[in-house]
Image (cartoon, rainbow, N blue to C red):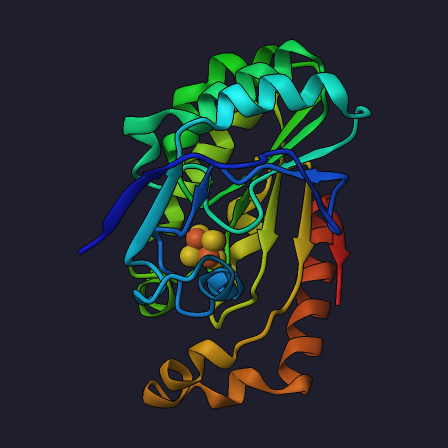
Length: 248
Ligand code: SF4
């Protein structure tokens, strides 16, 4: 059960450590990934519900962005940092769509990051924008592993099919193999021809430790495993002619 609230945000175009700015049209995320680092947002926003069981829709996000974009220096905008901008509620609220339209209208560079093929709804904006790119988090090639760690996020094959559609439409695309989950064998071949580059990262897996333990996957949590897997992924990228950045 998800508790949805419509809220008025105070700001929307926030300074980010990863890119120049970040836009989060929602607080909370229906995808509820087990390892999600964004669940620290609960502390900041006073939410008592478990991560994944609340979403605040910032219904004034587009209006705020229209004002803030006039006052700030142009910079790269990350959509989004602590929520999936294309979680299911976006079908109803269209906050991400309206924010992207404003950013495109002002020619700001944008990096969209999602796990959802719902991003295809906005392909009209994405392909006409001057400097937009779209990335999917593709954490494993094995959908049974995906179901363990990301049960409420879309299947891996749907994410890769969406990357294919976007890439064929002439949009710059990337895949984030992050956090690296077990079962990445064969993933680079699946991504071949569908992305311009790949990022590989590990994250804080503390929130997902019980899933590793229950499924006897602890051997996939060692320093040696991460180093070896990242090297294998980088080698496969080199063979496939895909730029690969290991960022840990
Ligand atoms: S999609 Fe991203 S923000 Fe949403 S729960 Fe998963 S990791 Fe967290």
